Image (cartoon, rainbow, N blue to C red; front, side, top):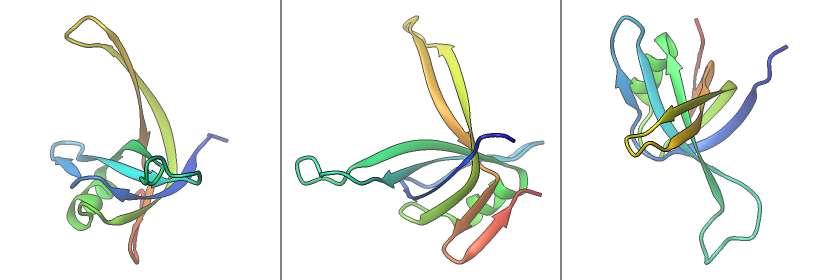
Length: 109
């Protein structure tokens, strides 16, 4: 069985859709977590997500900045590369299989 996780968060900006042979959409969620607020600000984690094909088209059409989104069965993918300054960079992106925007639900097909 593969590891996956579920989360709920708000879109930080409008999703960015890339149309092509395999459509994809990338977006970032702000996910609140428990804990004492620092300097009056809520504690939140900012996570990057990618969705493919029909789920990507669905998110691109219906999701907008500030929308509350539920992510189900996301799988972490680690990306490592060397940037223009020659520094090694590592980032994690979560691949989405199922998503719920408000009362709308879309699953991987």
